[in-house]
Image (cartoon, rainbow, N blue to C red; front, side, top):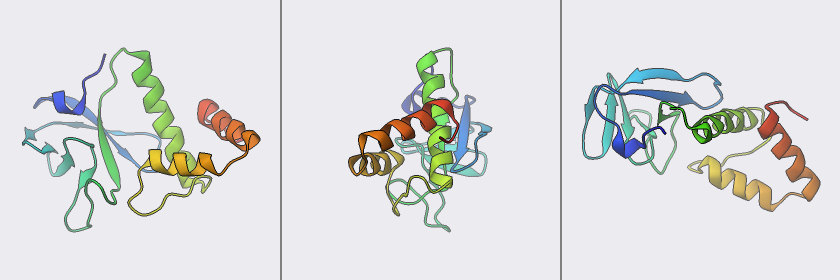
Length: 134
C-alpha cells in the first residue's frame, strides 16, 4: 500500500501531475515543513498536494497547475485512482467536464453528474473507465 501525503519522508519519490498531461513527473522530496512538501524548487501543500506558487497565485483551496501524490505502490486501488485521475484530467482538457475557478475535480464531477441524465452518466463513466471517448 502506498503512503499518504502526511507520511511522506525526505528522499521519497512522489509524482507531480499536471492538469491535462497524462504522464506525471517523478520528483524526490528534498525537504518537509509542517505544511509543505518541497521537491527541489517546487513546493506543494502537505495536506492537499496542490502546488504552491505565490507568483502565479497557486495554492491549496484555489487555482493550481499541478498536484503531488505519493508514488503508487502495489495496492491495485492506488493504480485505479491514479488512472482515474489521469482520465478525469483528459475529460477536463477535452471540455467534457467544465471546472470553475477554485473548484476541485471532485466538485466539478459532482456538479456535472447532478445535471446529467442516466444515459449521460453511463457514457461519462464509460469514458472514465475505458480511457476512450464514447
